[in-house]
Length: 125
Image 1 (cartoon, one colour):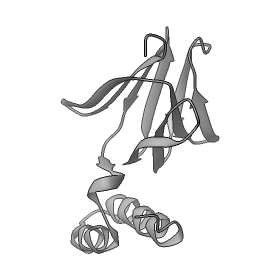
Image 2 (tube, one colour):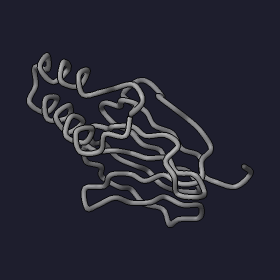
Image 3 (tube, helix red, strand yellow):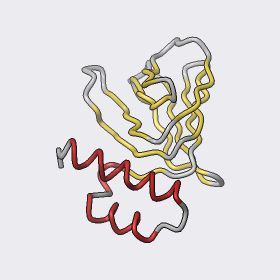
C-alpha cells in the first residue's frame, strides 16, 4: 500500500503501535470521526471508546479500546495519544471484569465497564 495514512497510537512515555493504514475511525467526543488520506488538519478530543483501523472495504483490521485522549490529524497522519489502550483481541469480558473490580479510581472502573458493555452488546469473538 503506497497511499494511506501513518497511524500512531501512544500512551504516556510509550508508542503502542505505528503503521501505514487506509482509514482510522476515532471515538471523538462529538461522535466518531473517520480519518482518510488528504483530510483537513484537525485536533480531536477523544472519549472512552473503540478505535478502529479499517481496510479499503471498510472492514476493521485492528481495534483498540482507548481511554480518552486526543487525535492530531495532519499531513496524512493520525497520531492518537491516550491514557490507556487495550487491543480488542487481547481482552474478554472476564478479564475486563477482573480489571474493573481491581480498579481504584472511578474513571478506570468506567473505562473497563465500557469494555464490558461493548463486548456484551457485540460478542463477535
